[in-house]
Image 1 (cartoon, rainbow, N blue to C red):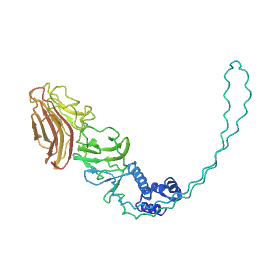
Image 2: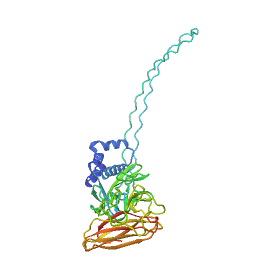
Image 3: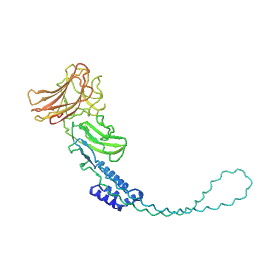
Length: 423
């Protein structure tokens, strides 16, 4: 049992929880029971099984509600990775098998009864009841077990393999790579389904127990999940499964969410507002717009026909009329970045304009910051505009009616965060 005690001392030094000790403690009888079941196994095979038990218990603690998760790269969320395996020891010589016990003697067979004289054939009678079953013969005595063969010599100990990577620091409650989270608007955040169980099969993911949105991308083997652009509703728990078995859960926190952000999924426009000074309003919608050959087929946030976005319907109104969407008041003397997604597809597209209304001047001054004109393709595109003013101001998103009804313009996922826009 010296090898088992050595393993226990190693696990205590690495602060592995008491669950592993319950598997390994000799005085609890568990190791003795394992030894009885595996008298023909090599010492190396037994240690492989003990390490598998340790890994399974570690996984249970790391994926429980109070467990931990580890991260290494700034844009990567990952869990504990397994170090290189130590060299196997040389297998000792196999002990001599014990002598086989002698077989017991067979029980004696009872004597047959005497047959009576044959009488004349009688009438066919009714079928009689089945006779009683005879008692079984006595078993012979079981032979004694042979003596246990001698244990082979222990092979030389290989170098210790790493149970955990040295640079893997576990953090409470499965956080992302920082307590503050990932900055909203960040690109290509990657989550790996690190599989320490040895399982192979179908990999599936959930986001807060729901299916992933189509905006999230999976690698060909589905072990790696990529969020191309982080939005506020990307926050939450991502869980990977193999053949339906839960492997790990990762919590993604998103920072930089402000009162100016809006994804329109609730069917409203958040703290933004329509104004009476324009010609018509932005409309909330799902799926494709009513006019053919213009507008998107789905929203940007969720990426399917259930998601909502805003658009201008250009089937009526006069060319150059416009609809304004106006932000809450923003304080001056502080740089901000306005990020939004737009869809401009159709032969009658006019233009999308981003501007600010400076409120402390008389009269108020409207400044145009960015203009996009004409069709921009049948896809959602991202627009970043740096907001800067010495005065308090409101942001205006203005969509213009074009030449005909093929001029629907859509917007989605407005994000405003501090600092100038970064490419």
